[in-house]
Amino acid sequence: MAHLRGKISVLFLVIFILILAGCAAAPQNVTSPIDKGDEMGQQSAPSTENNSDSPKAGVNPSSTNSGSSSDTSNTENQHASEKTQPIGELEVHYIDVGQGGSQLLIGPTGKTMLIDAGKNNMEETVVGYLKNLDITKVDILIGTHPDADHTGGLDKVIDNFDIGKIYMPKVQSNTQTFESVLLAVQMKGLKVTTAKAGLTLDWEPGIDVKMIAPVSTYDDANEMSAVIHMTHGQTSFLFTGDAESKSEDDMIGSGVDLKSDVLLIGHHGSNTSTSQEFLDKVNPTYAIIQSGEGNSYGHPTDEVLNRLLDKGIKIFRNDSQGNVVFTSNGKEISVAQNPWKNTAGVEDHTKEVVPIPQIPQNPDTSTGDLKVSASIDDASPKQNSTVAVTVKVQDGSGKTVNGAEVKLILHYKSTDTVYEGKTNADGVSTLSFKIGRAAKGFTVDGDISVNYGDKSSKAQVSFTPK
Image (cartoon, rainbow, N blue to C red):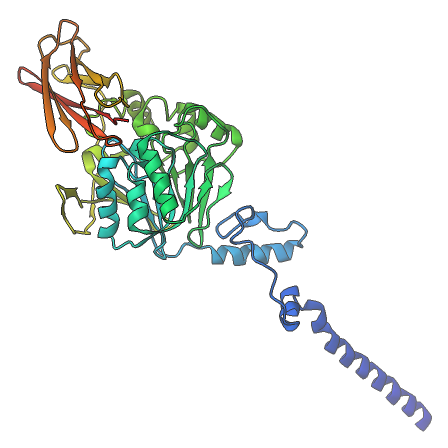
C-alpha cells in the first residue's frame, strides 16, 4: 500500500512539473517581432508612413497584409481607425486674386500648403495674405501649371517664406514669369519634384493628400495641371488648376476616387472644363469659382453655372464674395469670408472671418443688361508692337448694340493710358495702340467699361510684353 502511494505521489509530481513548464513556455509564443527586435537592441520594423508608394495614415485599413488572420486583421483595423480619427480643423482659403488661382491650406497642426499664387500683379496680395495669418513657412508649394495667372506670384512666395517641398508638372514655358519662378527656386537652393498622378504627399497626420493628375502627357499646358484630392476624416476637397476635359476623362478612366464635398471649378469656370460626366463623378456639395470680376473671358460661363445649379450645388465665388474660407473638422464643413485686403500698399491686418451666405447664381441675363466680351490679338507682344483689343457688346437678348461708348484703361508699370471708341453696327469696337517699351515680363491689365444710355458693363484684358 505504501508502495502504491509512492507511485501516485511521483505521478502527481511529474504532472505538476509539466504544468509549470507549459505555463513558463506560453509567453514565448506571443512575443511580437517588434518586441524581439527591441530586446536585441535593434530598431523596430520601419514604418511605411513616409513612403509615397506605400499606404500611410488615413488610407483605408483594408489595404493591410491579407496574410493575417481575421481576428488579427480586425484588431489592426480597429487600431488604425482609432489612430486616424481627425483631430483639429483643416482650413482651406480660396484667395481672391482676380482672374487667377490661389489656394492656401492650413492643417490641424499648423502645416501649410499653397497651391498657385495668382498673377504677377497679385503677388503682394498673396504674400500679404499669408503674413497676415502669421505664416512663416510653406511646407508644400504647388504650381499647378506654368500659366502666369497661376504661377505669377510663386517667385515672391519663395523669396518671402521658408519652403519645404515644391511640386510642378513637367511642362516648360518660355515666359519671363515662369523663368522668374525657376530662378527663385535656384537662388534658394531648392529642388522641384515632378507633379504627376500617383503621388501621395506627406503633409498632415491623418489627412490623405493624393495627386491624381496629370495622368498622361499633353500638348496643352492646361491639361498638364496638377490635380490634388484631399481627405480629412469624412470630408474631402478637389483642387483642379486649369485641367480641361481630356485630363478629366483620363482621371475618370484611371479609376481614382473623385468624390469630393468641395470642388474647385476647373479653369475659372470655362466651358472647356467641368464636363457633366466629371461633375457627376465628383458630386460635390459646394463649388468654388476663382475668377475676376468682369473678366474678358466670360468666366464663369453660363454652361458651367447651369450644370452646377441643375445639381443643386452651393456656389461660392471670389469675384462676388472676396476671400472664401472653408473649414472642416473632419465631419462637417463650414464656409466663411476673410475680409482682408491689400490695396494700394495699405494692409488691413484684420484676421476675422465671418460667415457668408451662398450667393444665388443665375446665369440668365435680363434683356435690359449689356453683355460685353473682349479679346486681345497678342497676349505676349514684343516691345514697340501694335496691339488691338476687340470689344463686342450685346443686349440681354443677344442683339448687337450700335453706338455703345467703350473706354479702355491700360495699367502699365509706371502709368495708366486711356483709349476710347464706340461700337459699330455689328456691336464691335476695335482699339489699336502701340505699347512702346513696356516693361518686359510685367503683366499689363486693361480695364474696359462700356456705357449705353443708362446701362453699363465691364470687362478685362491683359498682356505681358516679352
